[in-house]
Amino acid sequence: MALTVSIPAPTANGVPGVYSSIQAKYALIIGDVAYPLGGYPVTPGTFQFTQQIQSVSVLEQSELPSGWFPVYDGAYGKLRFLQLAATPTGPMNEAATGTNLSGVQVTCQVLGW
Image (cartoon, rainbow, N blue to C red; front, side, top):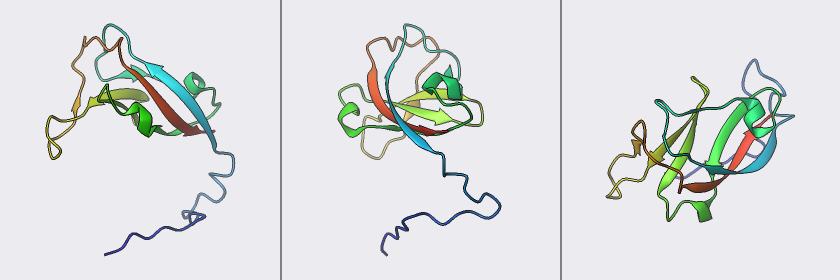
């Protein structure tokens, strides 16, 4: 099997031009001393967008040494922190409520409009 890449991406049915105003912003994300249940609440305004967050992607140089990855949960408007597994095939686990993430600093690319 081979990977297929289409550039530009085909427009999905019913949403013509939805990505025309998309912007990429780069953000340094720093945790705090008590991770909240279900993740940190975020809005488009958190990242200086006016309408929607599309995705949050960790930049490669930020992946280690922390081992923590912020993942945007659009269904609940939360930024969840997942930790790398101890083994390459193990699952990532979300931070437990109350976890001290104040030492975690991750640079991300955030897409939105």
